[in-house]
Image 1 (cartoon, rainbow, N blue to C red):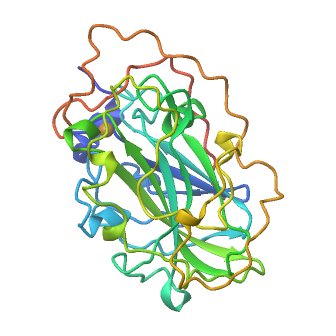
Image 2 (tube, rainbow, N blue to C red):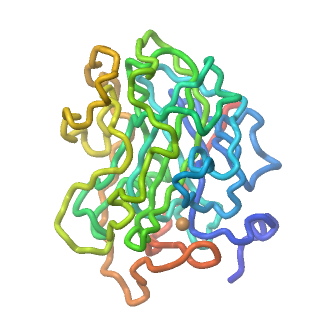
Amino acid sequence: MSRPLALATAALAAQVAAHGYLQSITLDGVTYEGYNYWNMENRDPNHIGWSHTTQNEGPEPDLSSPDFACRSGSEPAQSYGTVKAGGEATFVWTSDDTDRNPEGWAHTGPIATYIARCPDDDCTSADKTALQWVKIQEESVVEGTANDKGTWATDVLRQTGGAYSATIPENLAAGKYVIRSELMALHRAHLGEPEFYMQCSNIEVTGSGTDDLSGAGGVTASNLYSTSDDIFSFNLYNQNGETTWQVPGPPLYTGAAKSPANGGDEEDVDAGQQPPPTSADAPTPTPSQSEPVTEPAPTVQPDPVPTGDDDGGDDTYGGGDCQGRRPRKHKGKKAIRYRA
Ligand SMILES: [Cu+2]
């Protein structure tokens, strides 16, 4: 199979499989570069995404590795994007392997977003293994059933040019934070190999919020998930009728905004999802009064009946095909403009 010259010349990307990376992050309407591994010549020196050395756009398989925090060999970005508490962060994920991923992000699964306060209010030298992550957004099945016939958060992301949004909690104290966007892929979860893709970025939160997250029950990256979590045995190809699916990881921050792609109709965060009682008695913010943070989700087209070449996702990554998703009609990517 021939590949575009641009890819062929990116020697390090020779084994690119159907994975991806965070291309950009837009904060209160200003777009910053994430970390474009293969675009070194044109990389924005002010990128707010942490650098990494992931060579094949691939997932991080080891929950206990330091690489699980912010991807392989990650190091802090030296710049920040600015966003007000209650503001909007929009993440755009894509792939440079346009042969396998003509629509950018190919996989199916949930999305989660975490945030961690930086010690000494400095993220540029933060220890990725010590950051205490608090989940501020999560979404799994958006429509239909919790299997490959349903529409998952990353399916909606694919249909919106790779974009999803999270609301910065309204009550978050001003200061410097690392925000961690994570996409999960389920096509090999039944083999004990769910895929986790993450990217860290530096943000400076402004406003008059009061919660510095010190009592929010944050956990280090190596404690986000466990191989005993359901995602390590979940079968995407079971045609059951469940319409919900619990995103793994720590509980959602009590002041998190509803995930708008779910129409805001998620159940209220219940007592079982409260952080430990060490939480500060911060007042519970009222639901966000801002505009919904994503454009309305496009009408979801049901998947075509699988064809004979659908292998049920028993593909391999790392030298093999990791498409995990039938190609759909190419809708084109959003043009990304970076600030000057
Ligand atoms: Cu992949």
